Structure formats: structure tokens, C-alpha cells
Image (cartoon, rainbow, N blue to C red; front, top):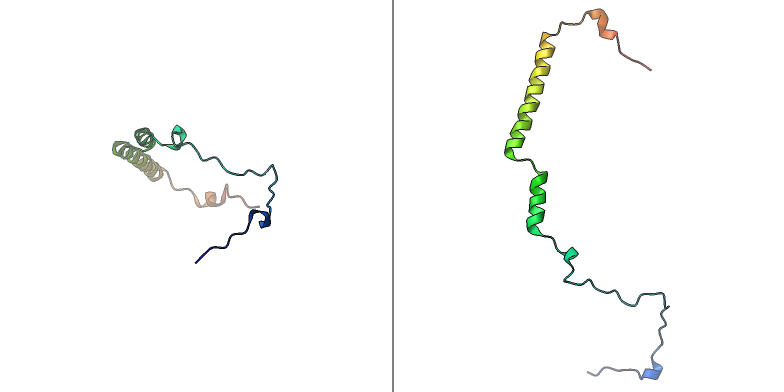
Length: 91
């Protein structure tokens, strides 16, 4: 099997405008912006995440606030039936 090739004079000419980029320059592989420092990214991740002790402290604070709200609601007197429809807004 032989490949047919056209002589140089019979090949069609292709013109490309000068403003068209002919090729893209590949990035340099030694460019530091292409790489992520694993140790630094791990430290940044750890700084954003709560530790287990922090989670327990947050849970305790939320539970304490909820307990205070329940105690306040239990200690508050029941409203009278006339107050049921006060401060209810209707357009």
C-alpha cells in the first residue's frame, strides 16, 4: 500500500490571519503555581475544621440555651384568652 502525495505546487494554500494565534504556549512544569503544598493545605484544612472538643463545647452551649428557653417558657404564666389575638397582623 502506497500513499499518494501531491506535489508542492498542487497543494491548496491555507491563509491564516495574523491576529489568529498559531499555537498556545504550554505552561512551564517548574512553575510553583501549578503545585499544591500538601502540608500547608492540610494545615489550612485543619484550621477550618472544628476539633471534637470544639464540637462538644458547641453542643453543650446549644443544649444550655435550649434548656434556659424551656425553663423560661415553663415559668411564664399562661396568657389570657383575650391576648390570643393581640399583636397578630393581617394585611
